[in-house]
Image 1 (spheres, rainbow, N blue to C red):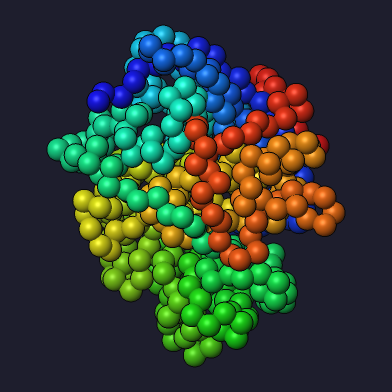
Image 2: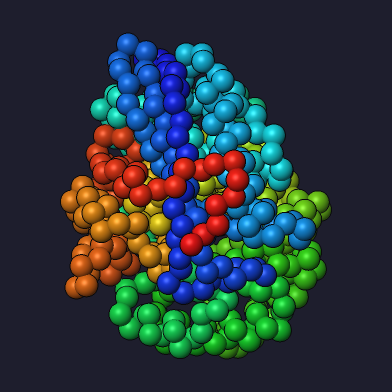
Length: 449
């Protein structure tokens, strides 16, 4: 059955300031607050009706755009420009087309490319939500049936692959394990305290780009994990802080030959984007790629990024709904076609309670990724209003819990998230944000409160 066609009738853009509970440092940036964007899209599905879809995503400063001449506020405003540009472009396209057809027809023009992709990625999620709500389908069934019309027009290397069969063969996971991020400001003592009250098995450790300092810090963290979590698994995230492969090789040499790091080396699954995006795909990793799998994240700025990275020796790429759900699905198809050791890894620390964490977790589960970076709930303040938290708790029981103080938060105590509460019609949501509490995204910057 062909995928239904639709028109996008309206797109609304909003934001909410999020003050972090504690500061978070990644790379060279420490963040204490950031706005979260919210997108509504009204879709009219041919012969079926209309509905509003919605999504949300953090606008993290200095991640999508790390150019040194751009301030944190400049980079957030760049994401707003990306949203506005995508809204205007999608609304200018009045054709009847599939959800993926509308996505494929829009070419971002903002710079850098990773920031330019932010706006269309959010609109695509909201359009998918609206489509599924019209059809009464949940995201797992809807994507497995290819109701979006996904094809290989943006990924010619997949020409000839039966994407319908690939999608139909996906088996959504009933649970996704949490991979806890140990930030650059997190001490071994704070990690030990967390492990005393939380059941965690997967960890992601941030690197700072100074080999000696990173090794010293990893040694302290490894001592805690070795003692507290037998059989733990870990990934390392360089956040583009290493200049080149030789610099990374020095880190790996110290990691492989430090007796106190033997447990961490055995636990290491992959290293994520250690080299700056401008240099990461400029030359092959060489022998370094044979020592441990490397994946790209910030270099994943277009549909051809993964094949280019593969040619340089990288063996994986991150899945993040904020970078594009269709790109993540097609990269998962590439992993199936190419076979082991190629992999897709679920990475996103900043997903906040509500639409963002629900939709990204549903995508992760659909793609069969058993663990995902998840501790935005430990940095953000949860829902924007008490009534909003109550609504999401009632609509998604088991995904959230109520704390003794009355606040609503993710149900993370057992170290995993159940995906059954995300199976309502639509893109993993059965509740509405408090739209009247949000700020419209205007043409001038709106600073976090």
